[in-house]
Amino acid sequence: MTRVAIVGCKRIQDQLCVACEKCLKAISKREGEFSRYKDGIELVALGNCGDCPGLIMPKLTLMKEIGEYLDRQFDVIHLGTCVVKAKKTGQCPLDFDKVASLVKENFGKELVVGTHPY
Ligand code: SF4
Ligand code: SF4
Image (cartoon, rainbow, N blue to C red):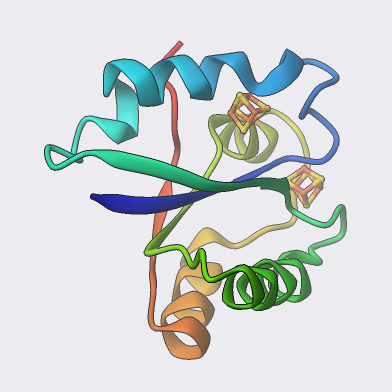
């Protein structure tokens, strides 16, 4: 069982991609970037990036601290497909490689880019 935290784009989440139903479907059906989890998934956190111009690391730190407080820590962080779209079609300032390095360095966790395929 892999415990997953999803981080979405604050400008898109529940605005242009409503109620995160797409990621919830993909988790249920093991589609998109969730197809890798053959041993099961538990979604332990679903939040946003902290907003522009790139406040994701303070936000992830808070998510980690709350997870420790609740004894529900995540194993892996997924950047939502919304974040990928914000980078490709908008002016998202996040550098995914840099975020992945910081996540590994600070949390010892893997960062996966993307979530649902819809
Ligand atoms: S554009 Fe990028 S930094 Fe801005 S809210 Fe969306 S994901 Fe976060
Ligand atoms: S891509 Fe996923 S995390 Fe992002 S807004 Fe859509 S359903 Fe939510």
